[in-house]
Amino acid sequence: MANLPEARKDIALEDVAFRSSVSEAVGNKIGGSINFINRRQTDKHDWHLNGPYRLGVGSTGPDGIFVFPFDAEIVAHMFYNGTAGTSGTTEIAIKRLDVGGTVLGDMFLINPTITSAAASGSFSAYRWSDGTTLALPTGHSIGTIFPASNLRFTAGQGVRLDLISGMTAGATLQFTIYFRPI
Image 1 (cartoon, rainbow, N blue to C red):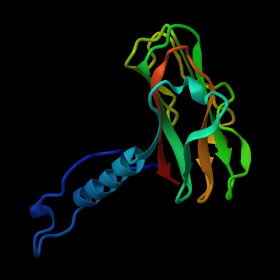
Image 2: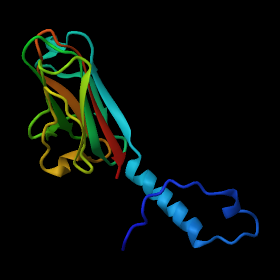
Image 3: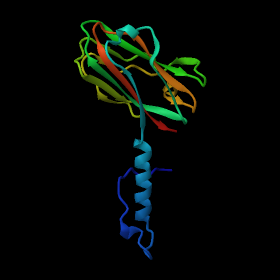
Image 4: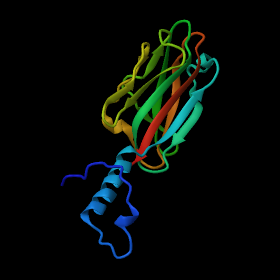
């Protein structure tokens, strides 16, 4: 069965006025609008390591954890480099957590990184839902996820950001995941 194409079309008052018939056009508008929302609706969670974050290398969850309130899938992520360091690489890992906090493993097969070659204020962004690189400036790497099931979570499972390494004199980083219910 084919899906209706996505459409962001408003329903006019004339479409639903008293004694007017509801036509296929109204059904198409409603179905297309629902499909538009279903494919684009997301929520997000941010981790912020403000200031000289290198002190947190080796710590687990320096900005806490996030628990999914419903079955969800991660559809995109963004990695922000506040102040570029003078040398080295910043690497983060996202740990998958079972209900209660037990580590199930890593979300990434190869973790995202930012090197000191990246500009201050730069960010990378990737949409996992369709494999689109939205931004990938010099010094950033997206990371690799395998298998794709690492992007799916059941209600009560969570994720935690761990800081694996930090650039010398690097300050302020942000990692954001975008997710939607499944």
